[in-house]
Amino acid sequence: MLMFFILFFLFLFFLGVVSFVSARKHLLSTLLSLEYIVLMIFFFFFFMLNFLNFELYFTMFFLTFSVCEGALGLSILVSLIRTHGNDYFNSFSILQC
Image (cartoon, one colour):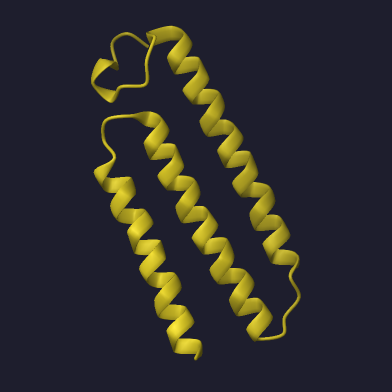
C-alpha cells in the first residue's frame, strides 16, 4: 500500500514537471506548474511524515517557504505585466531590463 502511494505521488510530481517544461509561452502557466509541483512535494512529505509517525513541523516550514515563493512569483509577474504589457516570454528581452 505504501508503494502505491509513493508511485502515485511520483506520477503526479512528474506530471507537474512535464507541464512546467511544456509551458513555454506564458509566465503565469509556468508559475502555476511550479505551484503544483510544490503542492505535490508537500503532500508527499505530509503523507510520509504521518506514515512514519514523525512530527509535522517540517511541513509548516515548507509551507511558509512555498508561500513566500508564490508571493515572489506573483510580484514578478505583476511587475513584468506593468512594464511589458503581457506575460509572453517572446516579448521579453535582456537588453530592455
